[in-house]
Amino acid sequence: MEKTIDENKQGESLVLEQKVGNHRKLFIESYGCAMNFSDSEIVASILSEEGYNTTQRLEDADLVLVNTCSIRDKAEQTVRKRLEKYNAVKRINPKMKVGVLGCMAERLKTKFLEEEKIVDLVVGPDAYKDLPNLLAEVDEGRDAINVILSKEETYGDIAPVRLNTNGVTAFVSITRGCDNMCTFCVVPFTRGRERSRDPQSIIEEINDLWQKGYKEITLLGQNVDSYLWYGGGLKKDFDKASDLQKATAVNFANLLELCAKAQPKMRIRFSTSNPQDLTLDVIETMAKYHNICKHIHLPVQSGSDRILKAMNRLHTREEYFELIDNIRRILPECAISQDMISGFPTETEQDHQDTLSLMDYVKYNFGYMFTYSERPGTLAERKLEDDIPEAVKKRRLAEIVQRQREHSEIRTKEYLNTTVEVLIERQSKKSSEQWSGRTSQNIVAVFPKAHYKVGDLVTVHITDCTSATLIGEATGYSNYN
Image 1 (cartoon, one colour):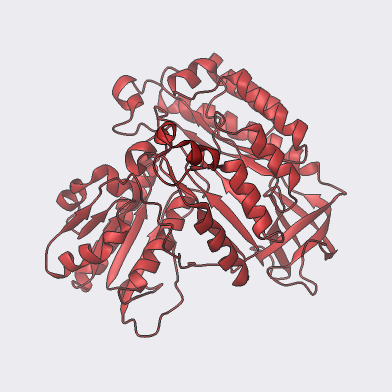
Image 2 (cartoon, one colour):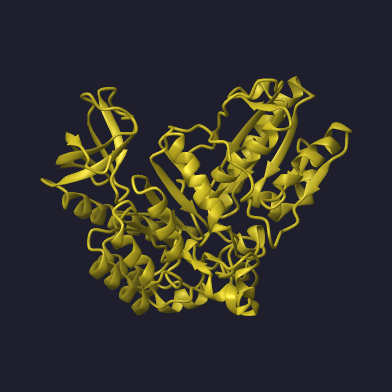
């Protein structure tokens, strides 16, 4: 279960720089993980060449697309509610076409065309280049669908159009798919096997973003630590590669270093990591370069060895502790965040207490916590009964959330009376007199605007905090500006 965007927030309708000569209007919303938001930028780029400019007004759209998430049932129900809204608009504007993209499209396939009569096309995550052909089918009055999973597609040859951007931060996709087969997760079925993008195309995209004024990028993948480029192909086929391909292969630590060197003044983040694949050379590379941000999102899902085995998480509790200890030793200033599932099938009170004790050991900076949601087609759905009562799931989740709040407060208080670097991203939501930005550790900081502007990297002396936000005063520009 990979997640770097808060799935509780509303879907984001995105705005594209208008291309002269385009007359049709596209309304696109994204839900779920950062990869979906990145994919929407690819879709907008493809459709820009087909005569579409984006609009924020649903009522004005010729084409409406929703990029979907299947990680939990709640995410799918949110999309279904949006389809009801589209249907109401379509009754007024019957020429409007509606399409479903992403993981939910891949999972449900033709059911969308059969059950959701409003839907005109269904497009899986690997089929976006086929959108022009599919739209031609729709224009001729036929339903259109392409949900074929690819073994090669990375969209590395498409320059994404940055949507709803602050002009400061951007996503850069480096891998697609996942081979790990966690029993609760639909990602391997909706996004296919792991394949990596040519590092040269990644560097070119980063260089282009820097030239356009961006100051921070996030390298994206379902499992970034499994990145491996040896000339193309699936990761699982690496053993068949030639000796030369193996000798010149680029792993994730190598890629991080290439990115850091390519633009020494650009911040580099990455998400998401898997404990079984995060290697010491990645942590050592993070420590070597100032511009690689000191934050690792390291989903653990449970603190119980028995539940971890049932989830097919290929690490134990002790191995996770060893990894945490190595991060603290090599990179003591690193923030660590988590994903946690409460109420996985057969979870006992002792398993739950093991999760709480693991949290006490790590004391994460922040995390994303959810009750178990059975996903159709997964091994857990086929083999395990969803036997934990909903009330028990929610009570355990509340205890996990409370423990995380306590730990978040401990971690933010560690910054009191210290000076941190903050990249200004936007005006504070609570005050028009303050800027908001993030530290290298991905912690939000707010401070008076003074003479600074969005995109500046400044030093901020921290005088107060909440459990999630640092509060302070800017003391000057960072030496790394």
